[in-house]
Amino acid sequence: MGVRRVVMHIDRLVLRGVDARDGRAVAAGLREELSRMLADPGVAREWAAGRELPLMRLPGVRVDDGVGVAWPGELGGVVARSIGRAMSR
Image 1 (spheres, rainbow, N blue to C red):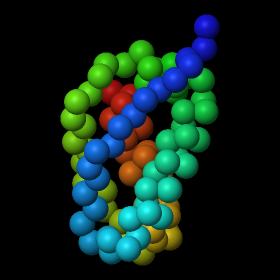
Image 2 (image 1 turned 90 degrees about the vertical axis):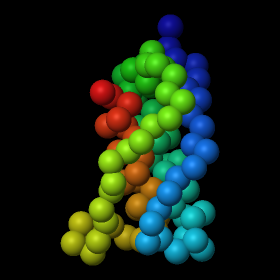
Image 3 (image 1 turned 60 degrees about the horizontal axis):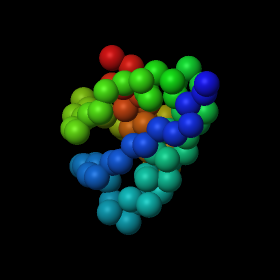
Image 4 (image 1 turned 120 degrees about the vertical axis):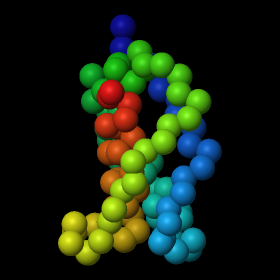
């Protein structure tokens, strides 16, 4: 049987150096990338079988013009992939 639902609550996301007005675009990029990642049945199964994490601290994500991230939408994708790496440990 496939995974029916994976629930993830992100109560607080601290983004130093990001303009507060860009928050919605960052959140949209985060949602889009997490949804794309969870569309893979293997990822969804792995995350659903995982443990409940009351707190997840991610390593700092450094973003500058040299890494090709278009602000602010793609920043959400960068953060989502960091979450994915943490979930796969």
